[in-house]
Amino acid sequence: MGEVLDWLSHNWWVIFPVGGVVGGWFGSIAKYNEKRRRDKIELARVKAGAETEQLRITQTGREQIRKQLATHDDLDQRWFDYELDLATLIDFPLMTDMREPLTLAFHKARVRADDLRPSDPDELLDPVRFADYREAVQDYAAAFDAAERESRRRKQSNFSPVEREALARARKLVSVALDEAATPAERQSAYRRARRELDGLIDVPAPASAQLEGRIAAALEPGQGGA
Image 1 (cartoon, one colour):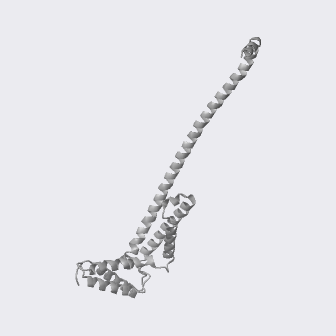
Image 2 (cartoon, helix red, strand yellow):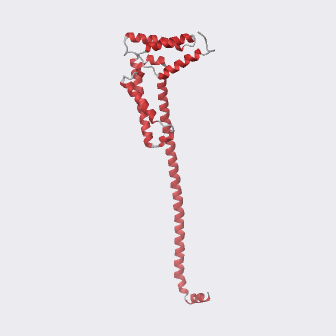
Image 3 (spheres, rainbow, N blue to C red):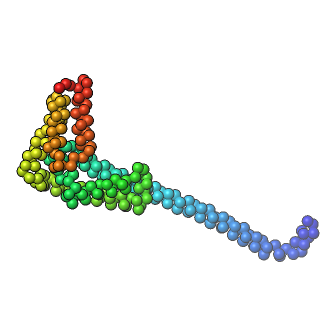
């Protein structure tokens, strides 16, 4: 150690350039560390911003999915109002007449929308699946509106006078079958006669028959009234 100090005492001029190099080196390290610190802060900011944007996109996507599912549910309810109501179907028989192009198109669109609707809504966060489903729901809505307008415009005009008389009788009989003031026996008899009148005229959906038959069966149960 004494020899080093002795050497430096005789070569003191070396200290200045070496000190400058060392000082510059430490300065470079400080600048590098500062740059790394700023880069980390910027990276964290960008990452946070990306996560926030992704959350916004996801929330927007979920809202769009919710709207499409709600639209689909509304359309189904409009169809159920026909499918479950035999009296309404008698008034507007075109809604189940598959010989009519508009009716056939409506039912095909309804089935396609049902097929593309997943059990887990989160599956629709996939952009391709959501686009297909949204298009199917839009087609379902357009086809339903077209079929309903035509059905309400034409009503029973496709039927002959004799057939319309049979539909009118069936309509009255269905009213009796639904009348809780009538006896269970009267209701059951009216329903059976209504089905005979409609045979060959209207394709009665199974849910409509099941619902009406269920209501009549309930009236026939003990404690629900007598014949």
